[in-house]
Amino acid sequence: MINTTTFIISKMDCPSEENMIRMKLEGIPEIKKLEFDIENRKLVVFHSQENLEIGNRLNELDLGSQFKETTKTEWKNTNDEKSQSKLLWSVLIINFSFFLIEMTTGLISKSMGLVADSLDMFADSVVYGLSLWAVGSAVSKKKKVATLSGYFQIVLASIGLIEVIRRFIGFEGMPDFRIMIIVSILALIANSVSLYLLQKSKSNDAHMKASMIFTSNDVIINVGVIIAGIMVMLTNSKYPDLIIGGIVFLIVVRGALRILKLGK
Image (cartoon, rainbow, N blue to C red; front, top):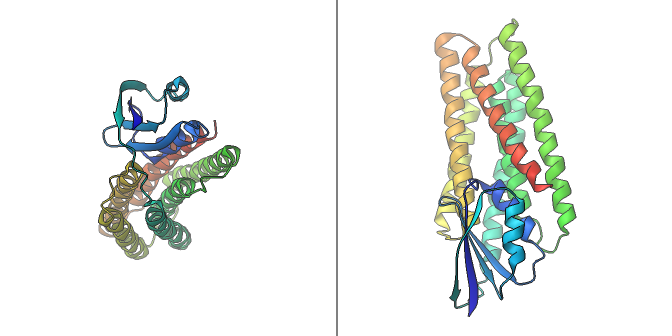
């Protein structure tokens, strides 16, 4: 038998908070497993004996942690991490590949929507990469990577927002709506495949569910860029592209700020 303590984490709504909690609780020897439920903002800690440090560390994160209950359960040490790791590697490769594709085509087509979406893909890659980091790696290394990645994204997103403002008030030509639409459709297909693979796994583990939620958000952004491309075509205006670009850049900044919390 093993202790299972349930916490409600009111501010946990994406994989960034999950990673933050994993890194914060790393090193507590009594912990055998962490089970996350992002949708219901719930964390279940499987631990061998009582340890007040678990609750104290969660409170230090300021994510609205509340103790719910501690019960006893039979411990079954499952070994499905390898298959999950393979699946998450596939999703990471898809995201990073489309980061490169969308960044390149966005610059060529002068589409801020594609450039912004590429940074969102990069943000996803960072989160998946941190999730897949070797368990034995030092916490300090993980925090350093999170900090550098977060600042890098903020710098790129800030440059992007400045460019959006410049194009709003300047006389920049229209983006190539054909490239916008075609590349965004390909990105939508890629994210849909990622979502299918994640759902096909039928995993009940919370970090897999969190990845599904994250990828679902990407699908929505892809659709937004496609609609912006269509609006550019119909209105013969650059503004739909700039509006969607600005929105996605702000989403990237929000994600980067969350990643930066991992480094604290």
